Amino acid sequence: MAQDGQVQTARGPVAAAGLGRVLMHEHVFVLTADVQQNYPDEWGDEDDRVADAVRRLSELPEHGISTIVDVTVIGQGRNIPRIKRIADQVPGLNIVVATGIYTFDAVPMYFWQRPRETMTQLFVRDITEGIAGTGVKAGMLKCAVDEKGLTEGVERVLRSVARAHVATGGTPITIHTHAAGKHGTAIAAVLKEEGVDFGRVVLGHSGDAVRDPDYLAAMADTGLTLGMDRFGIDHFATFKQRSDLVAEMCRRGYAGRMVLAHDTCCYIDWFGPGRLDDLKDWHYLHVSQDVLPYLREHGVPGTDIDAMLVTNPARILAG
Image: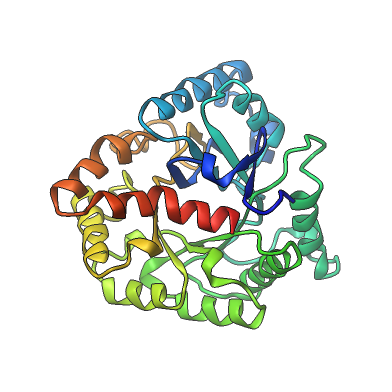
């Protein structure tokens, strides 16, 4: 693990004070690994994909973003050697990588007939020793609780993530959630049972709950941080709805319990070619270019913006 006040990145530990503005929930690539291994035609040339990612990510520092958290884990095609190769070519950007499992229901078959503590042990190894021989250590834990809620498999992953958090002295956790399902209360109950520090947990995709700020306020009151992290995904909520929700939560005094991001990537194979072309603003620069000016114009002070992009991420990532 990094020492207190430091955060592990793909290029090694970075002081929390040096993180700058942080997008707390992004991806570089989201892939179905075994499909890509057997049917690589759509992926194309590896060097071209890497070069495209380097080009896209290199634009972020020019727009005030110094760090992203790549929350790609098992179930989403995590490939840390590839991420390290990219990070080494984008020296102006820190990339924090994650460990965990992404499932909405059953656990991956690998874990079915292994001891229940296997997951936690692997997560702890990723955090303390590094991933896949790269020396890159995970700086975030990740799991998912979607529309089905806490199925047996989902709860198993959630508890394993929580136990890795405790075992490593508070490695931060981000949880993909289905905001309409309002599973936050059930999630919080499990985390409390496992002794998790709520101040280092992000309730992801909270920004989808554009019609229910009271639910979000209740979740923030527990100490959880709200991930307003799908800017540009207009299929769930519009730009105005997402931005107005952040402004409203700031007016209610919750700037200290929110972080911002897009949940975007350079390439995702979960949708066929062209299926996402209508999401014109789903890119890494949307928050910087469009969201922040809108928030300022609608009364959100600079101190609140700094809280959501600088102070809160540093607190969550470094403790």
